[in-house]
Length: 311
Image (cartoon, rainbow, N blue to C red):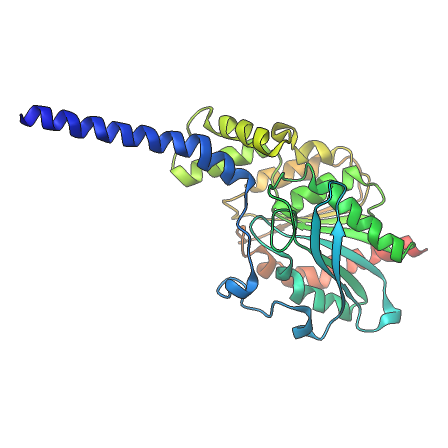
């Protein structure tokens, strides 16, 4: 009787384990790749400790509702300089995965004092924007082009740069290659190949690498979201970039290895590019540890690109 009882226990355990593995591989992993957490700063105060609305910074801004080519509504703000006649150029800011436009508000306030505008918007499937799936730049690069067109319709001669962090950096690279009317880019901490980074994140989550698992999950995610995930390769997009680019990456980044950032940078064919290693910075504290360099070097570099456009 005891042996029979143990056989049933083992059988039930194996059934539960099989169901868990099936769920993880066929549902949790694929959907986890393409459906990010939607963050509302009002409900995530521990992460977004700073004020989460332009009015808190006394900004001159317009609320945006931009419609993409596939009819998705993107929620955003266009923050303008505090002195309306001082506009030198504008950034389009692209946030990381499971983040939102509000993370750039404090920086936008700083830029407003420098005569630089900022367009902040929630990427599709993020924040208050529409869309169900994150496609890592495949569709998002077209969204950025629509935002750029909107700005230049209002200000035809304005220099517009794209600033991307992490996921936003990958989108920025693809956007620069796709839309040559973007004038320059600033990129922080991004990956080189989507299949590679999916594999890396899978290993970090479960503690070890299972051959073929990441590719299987990405293939299924690609079918669900209807995009070619294996073709999302910022390193290849970099080969087509002709605009000036400033790239930053932390040397302690365990989420996205600095070698990926360096590969992207090396693939940019022209000499109008700058690389900066942020010493001691990991993936999440790079903006803080690079803040002095950004304020004293990167922003003057960007303003120089804007002034070149105006000449």
